[in-house]
Each structure stands twice: as C-alpha cells, then as structure tokens.
Length: 126
Image 1 (tube, rainbow, N blue to C red):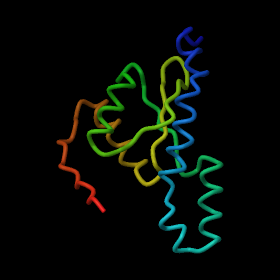
Image 2: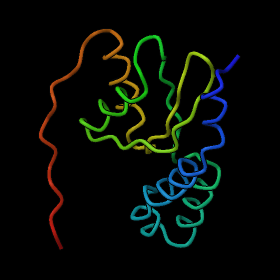
Image 3: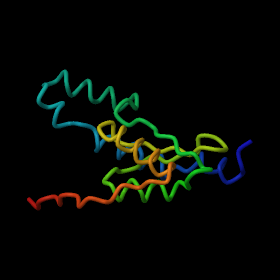
Image 4: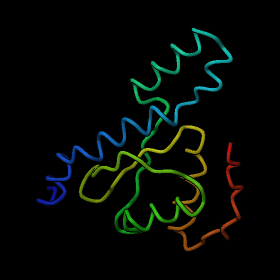
C-alpha cells in the first residue's frame, strides 16, 4: 500500500504541468523539421504518446529520488514529470536521447560507482 504522502503526490499538478511543458520543449524538433511536415507530425505524436520521454524507475531502497535527480543533473540529464510508481520505486521522465545514459548512471550508482563529472560544454550566447 502506498503511504499517504505518496498518494497525495499523485495529485501534484505542478509536476504534471512541468512534465508536459518539458517533454514538449525537449522533443527533437530540429530533426523533425529536417524531415518536413511528416517529421513534425511524427514528433508531435511521440510527444502526445510519451514515446519521446520514457520513464526511468529508481529503487527507493538503493537511492532517494532527490539523490538520483542530483546525480543525473550533475551529468547533464534533465529530469521532469517526477512520480511515485509504487511503494518501492519512484520514477521520472528523461529525454529519449539520454535514456540509456540515465539508466546506466542509476545502475552504476546503485552498485557503488559514480563516474567522475566531466565538464559539460557551455551553451554559446546568441
């Protein structure tokens, strides 16, 4: 059975709205535009179905959700649409392009290894 706070987290509209906006923004619109209208329609369909923002599962016994969020943020993986999956797992969405990297980071941390943080390139100001 889910705890009371976990049950109330299901009604957190702010995380849901942030998840929808983040999934839309982090869609691969550049690639879609190169493919024309078909590509844009495909990317929009992927956004609507959630195919471009898979949910990764984090075991609560191994790591708290905030620790996983900090770990992924340090390595350049944005998290959005956080949710409680069940009593033992929390979940969050990541961009499709970074799903394997995020899963590997979580699994490595659960085994006790954390790769060193590389300096991420800064965005150039336009």
